[in-house]
Amino acid sequence: MLPDLEGASVAALVPALLGGGDRAWLPAAVRDARAVVLFVLDGLGWRSLREHRERMPTLDAMEGGPITTVVPSTTSTALTSIATGLVPARHGVLGYRMVVRGEVLNVLRWSVPDGRRPPDPFDVQRHPAFLGRDVPVVTKSEFRDSGFTRAHMRGARFHGWSSTAVLVEHVARLVGAGERFVYAYYPGVDSVAHEFGLRDGFYARELALADRLVAELLDVLPEDAALLVTSDHGQVHLDEDDWRELPELEPLVERMAGDGRFRYLHARPGAARELREAAEEVVGRLAWVRSRAEVLDEGWIGVGATGSVPGRLGDVVLASSGPTAFVDPALRVETRLRSGHGSLTADEMLVPLLGARGRR
Image 1: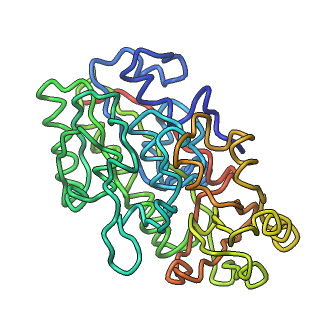
Image 2: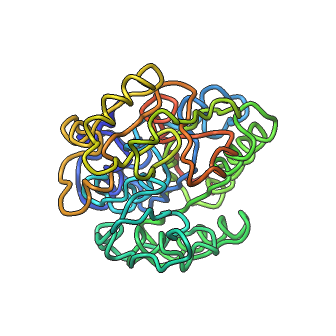
């Protein structure tokens, strides 16, 4: 499932809400609202919401349906597309980990190996958030000074929360003070899914809690304000034995990056073509195998990749087509994750776009 980058995708939300673009695909409750709160529930896929709809009555009752996220369907890429209104090819944040200036940058931690100094966020992603508008952002306090925040939220006004009660109160006060657009973010669904997987009572209980949080936001918003709920990606459950080692390919690989389900293989000098052929033979039944040129030509990340951006993709990309993730020997701790995302399955690519008016 490729992203609908010309239509209803997360990359088109901010341009539709702030840029005067086509709003017909937005829920009706949002189109003529005085104020809009865009609430991102990290990790909530459309299919998961439908499967657990009885636990999420507030979201189930809201107007709207599924839209697509971007590729790779992972937090760092999708949140940057949401904030900037740009496709990944344009903003250049192409995964959880990507090669920048010859080193693997962990985007969420904004770190490189061996404690060396990471690149300046501005050198990695230069586009302003929210079309350059002065927008308040309500997110976790610990994200205030992170490199990733400075890369994808440049220019926004930061309002930190330490509990969901503070999140709700910030949103209520900002809308009450006359803000026309507020961005809010909650990472709980994604965090619980990664730690416990999708088949555990922890995950089901977290979904119910997230739904109650949506209800609280609706309760504090006035009737002329709308809540618009979306997500950055869905999830695929991963058991321990779903993580696949790649010893057959390692002699051809200089380094790996990306996500477990969207693995970048950077070839040793002169081995890119051989690596592409070998990867197809080894994991072609488990993944969509593409060269860098094929990913760009097929429009997976949109158009407009220039400068160093294409090189942030691997020479070969493994996009998992089933319940499989690929091990990077340099980051074995990743195999502890009990859910994953990044690839092009419907479970990962479809996210909700649901709206309702406030009911205070």
